[in-house]
Image (cartoon, rainbow, N blue to C red; front, side, top):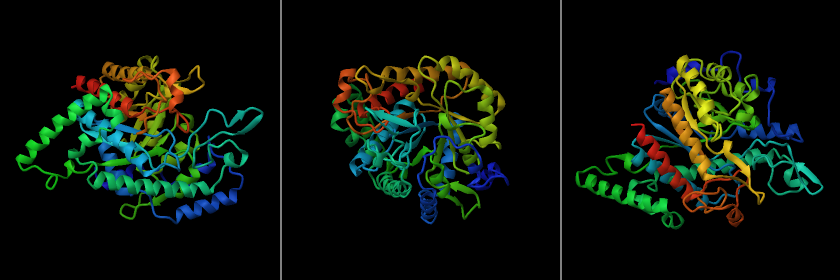
Amino acid sequence: MSAGDLTLFAGGSDWSPSSWRAKPAMHQPAWPDQAEVEQAGKALHDLPPLVFAGEARALTGLLGRVANGEAFLLQAGDCAESFDSSADSIRDKLRVILQMAIVLTYSGGVPLVKVGRIAGQFAKPRSSPTETVGDLELTSFLGHMVNDIGFSEAERLPDPRRLLTAYHRAASTLNLLRAFTRGGYADLSQVSSWNREFVATSPAGRRYSQMADEIDRALRFMTACGVTAANTPQLHEVEFYTSHEALVLDYEEALTRVDSLTGDTYDCSAHMLWIGERTRQLDGAHVEFLRGVHNPLACKIGPTATTDEVLTLCEVLNPRRIPGRLTFITRMGAGKVETLLPPLLRAVRDSGHPVAWACDPMHGNTYTSSSGHKTRNFDDVLAEISGFFAAHTACDTWPGGVHVELTGDAVTECVGGADDISHEDLEQAFETLCDPRLNGRQSVDLAFRVAEMLSARH
């Protein structure tokens, strides 16, 4: 696919980076001073792009392979990134994603597209605009891009200066990711060293170690045959892309740029942007903004989505039917996916739209435990993915990927998994800023289970 082909789905003469302002904009911060927002937006607009248009075009091509059933998407990372994340925390998150990628590629037998929920996932929509503790009612925590998690009036006040902090935190995270993925850390010879202690001592970790030994033997054989990292860059580095929910539109508009090579418009805050389940209104500001940028896009689809809504989203977001332009990320719930997903799959398949389908098994399976912690059960997560695969098998379509919230830290936020975390264990290391995440052991365990489903499709 050429750069010229990608110009076909431009927003049209009625679109501009600010045309979203004429539409209803859901889940936007109640900024106390609009002049400060405009000042922050101007400062952001004058800063360099975080990602480049050519990288976004390359990802569109890779996701086109997913849409065509030739590759699998792993989209993973934090629920809500913190401004306080250390370099070690970012490295460990990347390491878990790379571990999962190795498992899925080696055991699942398909090429993998790796996209992180990282370097920009600083904002979150909330079910309630306010939160009450005792007699005090304050604005809900909306992510570090907007306010702070501390429960005081000053900390919860939306602060436009945080938009600039988000940019600089994203830039430093991207710099670190590029160094790790291009500088040797992602070398296949390092696969064994990625097996951290808290993963190595789990059943999934031991299984990973066995797989790493097999890869090491294969690499030694390839080296003996003259195939080395020096003449095969794929052994030494990985293609890794970033994504986040394009929620705070003041931030996204300010980072919109015109590509000097093609003249096309890109949102340069990330390679891939997605529209959330709460903001996918067809006449809403988020659909309006994203229809005009040339990045690959995704849209979350929950249990209330109708075939008419989904087909209209296809037409609005990808009218020229470019493979890789649009991914639907389904979040139905473990008990609903096999019933609700097939009609959508058939409608899109029969329409001829080249959509990539991914499964978010996290958000439809969240509940509050008896201890008061918001959590997810590993078995429910696995069950939704299994139902997602079953629905695609029934419709003769391709189950293109998974979208999961995880961390490299040894947290106890989701129950179950190989270590059988209980509800009583949740308080030991419940550290998320918002929703519960899989830890490293659970993530690797999940990768092996998904790899088995993938392998069965071949």
